[in-house]
Image (cartoon, rainbow, N blue to C red):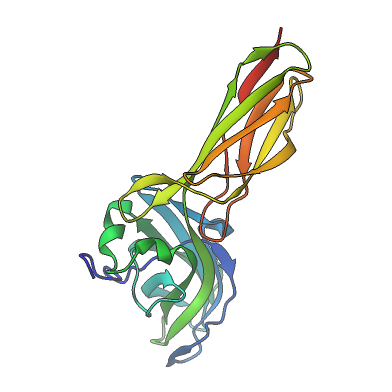
Length: 260
């Protein structure tokens, strides 16, 4: 470790995706069980270089005597040693659904400034599939330690720009569309160009509701994009990156082109 240790008061490192109820390994006493877990509403958790990310883990728990709550929640990269992670568990609230069932929401928090101290190796390698574990308690003293109650993805945030030159041309003229794809580096907390990625150039005709893909271009060695297109109508152009298993999808802001 280069600084912070894992868990932080039963924290860990989490992200998203909805997963199933029963963990790969579980032990405890009695009949209290986790029956469903949803992380971040079922969506990916996207982490950049500065903004603290807070998200919920909704854990549905059932026991014949009623649910007391959670005594432990942790999350970490599915391929790492159990218990290591850079997410804090910052609070829990439980809502009773019936005499036997409650939904307990654990609030998780990721502060990017802590990530470089998380491991002696490259912290960027922790992007991808993560898992959640939890210990649940019942009113009658039953408890259950459940591992891998949810799998989800923690992704590095992407940035994408679009520039058209010139921005006003005659019909059927050619214009150059450039841009750059970058993604968060969790080691130095900066954005770096993302090379070798397929990015879609999209166009939305003036007055239209949606963009359509015109062509696909591969980013250069520092994430740069450049291509020429023939203009047949006024409208807005943008680059669209569909994302990867470790990097978020990103659509740039549109750049408007008008006809003379």
